[in-house]
Amino acid sequence: MHGEMACVLLFTRLLPFSHRLTRPSIVLLSLFLSYLCYCALFPVYTIMHKSGDLTPSCQRILVDGARRRLQKSLTSCALLLDARLSSANAASLRRGDQRPFSTLNSARNDTHSPIISARFANKKLPNAIIVGVKKGGTRAVLEFIRVHPDVRAAGTETHFFDRNYDRGLEWYRRLMPRTLESQITMEKTPSYFVTKETPRRISAMSQNTKLIVVVRDPVTRAISDYTQTLSKTPDLPSFQELAFRNQCLGIIDTSWNAIRIGLYALHLENWLRYFPLAQIHFVSGEHLITDPAGELARVQDFLGLKRIVTDKHFYFNRTKGFPCLKKPERSASPRCLGKSKGRTHVQIDRDAIEQLRDFYRPHNVKFYEMVGHDFRWE
Picture 1 (cartoon, rainbow, N blue to C red):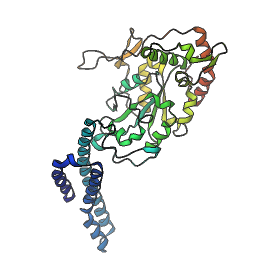
Picture 2 (cartoon, rainbow, N blue to C red):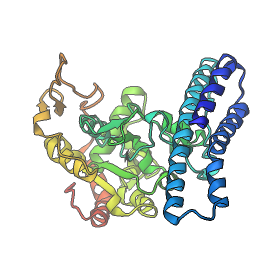
Picture 3 (cartoon, rainbow, N blue to C red):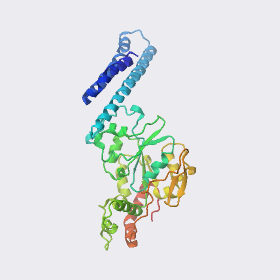
Picture 4 (tube, rainbow, N blue to C red):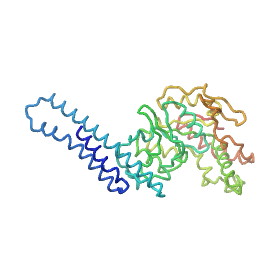
């Protein structure tokens, strides 16, 4: 109790001067307060060491009581410090700083450091991540699974493990939604699946992270990818120009990202160096359209959740050619994905499509063998 009162009293005194605190000052202050809370319990340990007549059972009671008091005191200090850091972080962002003021746990140079209390303010690092693939149906899976009351997800793609890793795990954690202890925290960034460094970085964060990969016929996926890019870049070369080095000879340009993403077996080999196959769940992009409830049932099983999201939550939107969530309570309209989802694909020459299918066939067969499931993309 004395340690907690000391923390509160000191923070009360410092609040009027918080705008003068520098980053090193805040870090040193946090260490000092932790030490202060610990010292408040020191007499307990002194008594234990000097009293030779205490029975083992009494010693255990004193140790357990001291541990609980220490944990409670440190939690109180940590929460107060987190509040100060949040204010300093907001001020830093208002000044136009690119990096959050409170990036305490940096992941520079791909080295992993212990996470400094990743549960401040009820924000946790994700238990599960949708890691891919682009144009496979990742947004649909995220929107559908977050209907579950035990799932909370970051709304936007964080790109932490491929673009923002040097910002540190503390920065990443702050992007996550507030969750209860019983809830699962999720995020989705489809480019993770094809980024070489990502599996190792996620494993460094937690080897228990569950991974979800939404896969789709690689030929259809490539055309969808091109269609999306073309909508943003109208002067883009034709699909055939980008997909083939020599179409007459059937030589595919695997350096084009739209083609390379579909080499699922190649990318999966990299993930299996860091995660067992049982920790990766594959969602069929095709079945997600024709049987969303069935695919979501398997996702819920994989995450260890009760099957709450069922067929009663979906209806098929014939205009979009895609399933939508039925109108939730207190809402004026159903929840469908954005305009960019379900758009009409660019028409591609039939011969080019057959050449691509011939190219992908052995890669698909290898992928089926690796995951133990035939997605029937032929």
